[in-house]
Length: 241
Image (tube, rainbow, N blue to C red; front, side):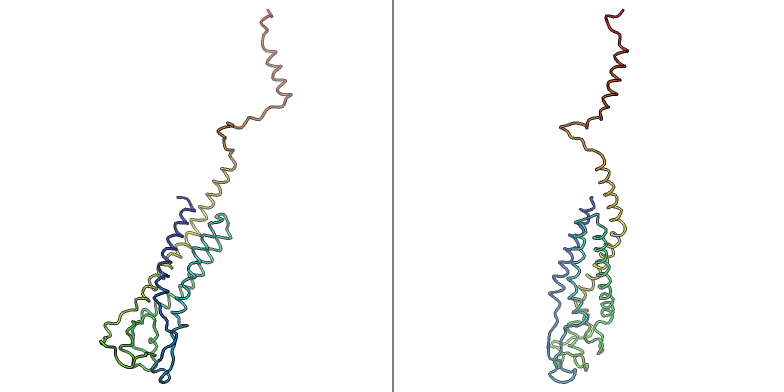
């Protein structure tokens, strides 16, 4: 398979997976702008879920589109080392940024649904966390009584939207590593091979079916005259005895 065809297929697969990931992650993630928090500083205190770590992570998801866009830009001039370097830079910067988010998500995943004040705003907590731990002072839970029907600690699960973003982030981190390895190993070799093949093709004159092979270079007139004279002197005349 040709180099460009392979990379365009990779762009299509990456873009399809990213579109599926982004469409759910950004629409299913809800961040209440303001709501009444019962027990932070006093009755009626307004609380916001925005500007949290999970909020910034969700807002950063569209930046993943820089990877297929920079690769498509690179394919516009496949022999350009500058464009390839730009794509590699995009991959490295985005991988490092999302690796930080993923590391923090691992910490949140490990402490999901714990009954502590420091864990009250963990994005990995179940949506029903406040049904049980609403009475922790400073938790910010809006309810003042257990949920009806009641919920037990064993029934709390890791937030489904958080798990979706967590595992998809891991998938994209692996894809970015695979992209980086290709860009520094296989792609340069394939480009150099393609460049050598193009140069060799340009050096060999192509045959035109209508005009035939290119004409042979003709000898100078002086040499042709001497050759004709030499050949004529060697031939015997039919009238000479």
